Length: 195
Image (tube, rainbow, N blue to C red):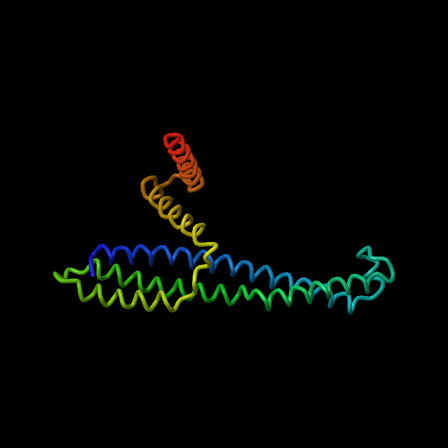
C-alpha cells in the first residue's frame, strides 16, 4: 500500500464524515417536525373531545362544527402517522449518526498513524486499509442522488474552515458570502476562457 492510497482513504473518510453528519442532522430535524405535527394534531383532537360548547364558542367555532374540526385533525393525525411509519426519518438519522461516529473513530486512527514516528508504516497502513474497507461496507449508504450536493457541501465547509483560520474574528457570514462570491466569480471567468 502506498502513502498516496493511504491519503486518499483518509480524504474519503473525512468527506464521508461530513456527509453522514449532514444527513443525520437533516433527518433528525425532519423527524422532530413530524413528531411535533403528530403531537399538535393529537392535542387538538383531544382538546375538542373534552371541550364543552362554551369553550368551543370562545374559539370562534360555530355550533356543530367541532365534529368537523375533530374529523380534519383526526385525518391529519392518521396521515402523519402513516408518513412517520413510511419515511422513518428517525431511524435514518440514527443510522447516519452511527456512521458518523464510526468514521470519526477511523479518522482518528488515520491521524495517529500519520503522526507515528515509526520508520515503516506499511503494516499500519495495511491494517487501516482493511478497517477502512470493513467500515465503509457496514455503514449506511449515501443516497446517490444526494452525493454531488453533499460533496460540494464538504468542500465548501473545508474552505470556509480555512478562511476562518486565516481571518479570526471576522464574522462567519462575511467569510461565507465572500467565499461564495469568489467561487461564482472564478467559475464565470473559467467559463468565458473556455469558450
